[in-house]
Image (cartoon, rainbow, N blue to C red; front, side, top):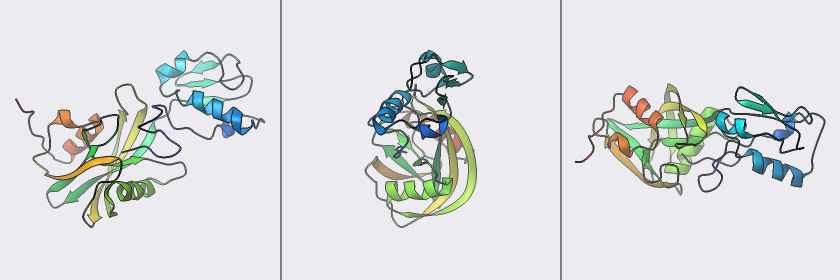
Length: 218
C-alpha cells in the first residue's frame, strides 16, 4: 500500500520511482549536491504527459529530445522513462473471508484496499509481498497462487503502476501497521460498495476472485 524508500511517499512527492540516475549518464559522476537537485526535479517526471512538458535537461540545461514516453539529453546522456511502478499485494483469505485494509494516507485516504505495496529497488516480488504484509499486518504470510498483474494509476493524476497479486494466508491475527488505518475481515460475498475502494485494479482483482460488493447506501 504505502510506497517505500527509493520510490514515492504518500506524504511527500507524488512523483515516480527515483532510479539511480548515475547509470544513465555516460562518463560523468556529479557530486552529491548536484544529484540531489537532479533527483528533486526528475521526481516530478511521472507520466508521458508530464515528460512531454519538459524542455531543458535538469542536469546540464541542454534542450531535451522527446520520444514515446521518454526524454533524453544529447549533451550529457541523461535519460528518463515513464515506466510503471511495480507493486506486490495479496488477496488474504481466511476460509470464506477476505482481508481489507483502510488506507491511512493519500491517495485514497479512508478507502479500502488490499494489503501490499511498492517494490524496493533490487527486491524480488515475493520479498516485497512478505515485507509489506509484515509491515501492514504484523504477520508472516503463506504465499499461494499467483493471480496476475493489473495496470492502474496511483491516484487520479498519479503515476502508472503495474500491480501483481497472490493469494495468501496469514500466520497469526493481523494488527494494523502505521500506514494502515484499519484492517477488517469481510465475507467474500459482502464486500463494501465499489465506491469505497481506493483503486480500480483492486475491484477488478476482487471480481475475478468471485467477490461480490454491497450496493451503496441510499
